Image (tube, rainbow, N blue to C red):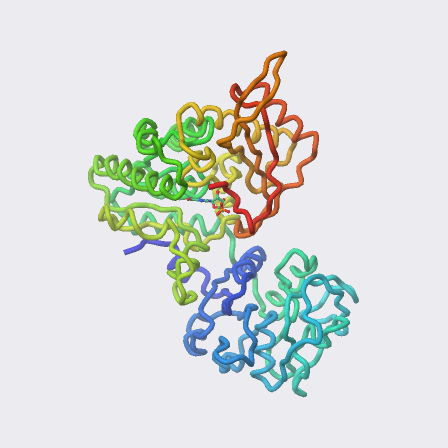
Amino acid sequence: MVVDSSSVNATALSNERVLVLDFGSQYAQLIARRIREQNVYCEIIRHDLSAEAIAEKKPVGIILSGGPASVYAEGAPKCDPAIFNLGIPVLGICYGMQLACEALGSRVGHCESREYGRAVLKIGDSSGLLAGLPASMDVWMSHGDQVNEVSSEFEPLAATSTCPYAAVRHTRLPVFGLQFHPEVTHTPLGGTILHNFLYAVCGCQGLWHLADFAQQTIERLRAEIGDDRVICGLSGGVDSAVTAALLYKAIGSQLSCILVDNGLLRKDEQAAVIAEFTNHFKADLHVVEAEDRFLQTLAGISEPQEKRRRIGYLFIDCFKEEATKIAGAKYLAQGTLYPDVIESGAAKDGPAATIKLHHNVGGLPEQLGFELVEPLRDLFKDEVRKLGLELGLPEQLVWRHPFPGPGLAVRCLGEVTQEKLNVLREADHIVVSEIKAAGLYRQTSQAFAVLLPVQSVGVMGDARTYENAVAIRSVNTDDFMTADWSHLPYDLLARMSSRIINEVRGVNRVCYDISSKPPATIEWE
Ligand code: XMP
């Protein structure tokens, strides 16, 4: 059994839910986030669910996402055309628009010139869906097909120079289409369009609030867990901290937290987590001091995947050993988020294909015989952060940059030793402190130091040195699937470099990593 919060939402928010039918768009999650930002609960579901099954979920609106296929290609994903006759407003975006228009008698074909990037939208009818918008605005296009001819029942609302039907409305049914993407930031007024769809077209009231979600989830967890004990692993990251905070509010002393100190954490990380969960939340916290065991298992190992594998196994061993000491534990709490649930294909009625098996889904609980508690499985990362603040966690913990499970080991290239970890930890601390001091921590998504297995010649004082090189990595990203290197000011880079070389013994050279992802990844290993 999995105790999660979805049944809470189902009862409390069933009057106001929007469904996104996913046709394989890279933006389906972004659409759902944008809807929730407007205080309307939104779920992503399979595109091929029957109209009947969709109606049973009682959505107030349906959004058809974009997708990579051509609607006229063989095997192209389709929705049940009966959804257009449910009387529920439908908004098709890009592929979704082409699908809706084709299903309702319009013609879709190749564009003369494929359109990727910014375009200027000229609005002909600024009422309803496009109310409150200027006559001309920037939008983001990304398509090779478009609606070339609309049936007499469609009305064009807006056009670009190459796309005559950039926004359309059906005259008889509550069906709308947008060829561009209102959900991306490159469509600066896209939020107004989504707001119009939700509030003017679907009649939403805006019932989705995180404070209510927190309260309802706490009550629900309390009722379902009863007198049983729950174990929660803390990693120093925001997801596990918010999971633990939520559970602490629900069941207090019945919660036992485990922090495995693998010696691969950032500077002062262990102390910060301990302080938070013993001073603020008076949780039962078990700290497993396993630094030596991790160093031993990593000794002589340079291959990145082998490092990860060893760290993963040893983590499970350490966690298990501690967990079995905690008498009467029935549940294991995990900070699984909505994107993990979607990506693992485990979402209720979610996309069928398993894209990847995420490390948070499966594994530990089955091995330990625990039932799983996943109170965050309906939330996106930014919602988890807001929830953390709502629950009283400090800003510095809630806004901490993400940190990989294998920790500093994948940033200490080659063999991991205590000595190298000490150098790396200090250099990393300088990078992060300087970014914070420059007021750029929240504007960057992940910033850290990497210790390279390279020595180079330098000169300090009058003496020749032959020491390590450190790379600074700082990236900006929304989803961590793609990322750009942060364009940090030169004087900030200069301060980091000079502080690292002066303050960290064993480093005489600092480089800045200017690779984007893809083709590079964020981590170096
Ligand atoms: P990459 O290096 O794949 O990283 O571009 C994308 C994001 O994932 C984090 N990451 C991990 N997180 N276990 C984790 O929990 C891992 O093994 C792992 N590897 C990478 C990385 O820090 C970045 O945020």
